[in-house]
Length: 200
Image (cartoon, rainbow, N blue to C red):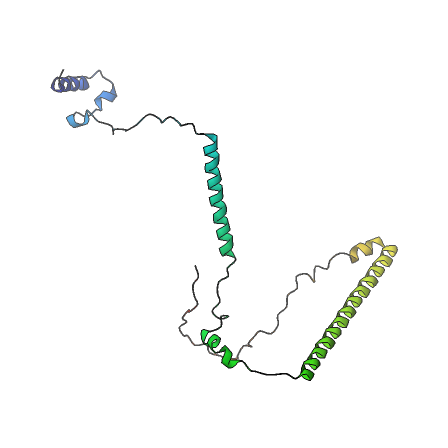
């Protein structure tokens, strides 16, 4: 049966009054009767190949070694600090290092005098540290003794005494700044050019 014979029969059926509303709403335009869906290129699932467990283990070991190598490389580069141009010594000064060095020869008496001064200073600082430690121990001992006496007198007062003082904890202070403010200073509106280096 050809399409030429099918189309008139289908039109006749669509125009009959006793058919459902679905057929009445069908367009009579010949181009809308037949629609082709897009071709879906499907293929059967590939059969999974069974691999040797030793091969799988070797692959996993290779992946693990590769990741460990990347971690080592990152840790190595993480230790490198960004260079500060302000702290680097100019190459001109490095070239002139020998010219700038002063050749001072100290006499044995001067060297001995300096060594004695260093020993005296070290001895002085040692005595100062011992005095500070003794004072701290003395203060802590008397503080504990006072708390023990207070505990014997009243448990409530002792509990109050060992509580932290919350009025002293959020301690803030405002001191002098590096450069004091200049009174009646008119700040000029100038252009600022950022010359700092950008690091990625």
